[in-house]
Length: 220
Image (cartoon, rainbow, N blue to C red):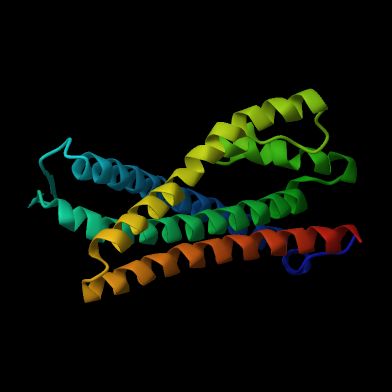
């Protein structure tokens, strides 16, 4: 098995420095989780308000003390706001995943002395780290077919929920294109929103590909 760059680095520092570093990872995970939660909350609020207002179920609302009742404002500008939140959510989620992965490596370096116990590291770190909904549903590679199927049943509706903001972006950008395209600045909003969405997907795909390549390098 090949060592990763982080493992070479961790092998070069003493135990005291490793303990300080693992505390830093813990704080980073907690802070990033707050960003993810806040972003998720505002994504839900903006999407919910968009459909309430554009379907005339709500006459208006107040945000930061400002009264908003113009439906055109919602249809024109909310897609850009949601695209920014999607990008932020993606970056924060990727950062948290990297921190958790490095935390697990560091945890094994400090506390696991025998290779036979390395398989328990994901379970142990899930207990030590702050609660994470997806981590609790996560399954390990040694689980049986039935457990894998149950996990798939858990994740299927969650995956649909994760894709809802992208369905919203398709719906809202389509509305923007057909209703307001003649206005010059709408083109800027449209392509800016699209850029944030594409950037989020590119970052996510890069993260997945890099993770797969690192896994293959470690195995072979």
